[in-house]
Image (cartoon, rainbow, N blue to C red):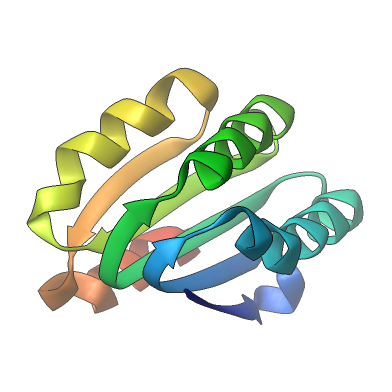
Amino acid sequence: MNVELKELENGKILEVHLTGKLVKKDYETFLPAVERLVKQHGKIRMLVEMHDFHGWSCGALWQDFKFDMKHCTDIERLAIIGEAKWEEGMAVFCKPFTTAKIRYFDHTKASEARDWIAEK
């Protein structure tokens, strides 16, 4: 798995780029960044871009569940960019754990996702 982070708008927006299969160790990459930004701004927006994404390992799924429970009110908007096959699963999986507005975008609409996440 490869996880890349990019902070925008002085850290009010966190872009997370995922490729491959998400494993428990990958959360060690972005959890500290999320927690630091939430502490700094209160609420943040996240844009998650999945490219050649293969899902989660069991350990990563548990970490994701714990992350969602802990940060369910910290994320104001969540834009997910990925292949159509992940759209329904991601929306269903994320919805119970967050009060964020969530939108899913196909890779061909990445610029729309960036515009939406940055809207005032």
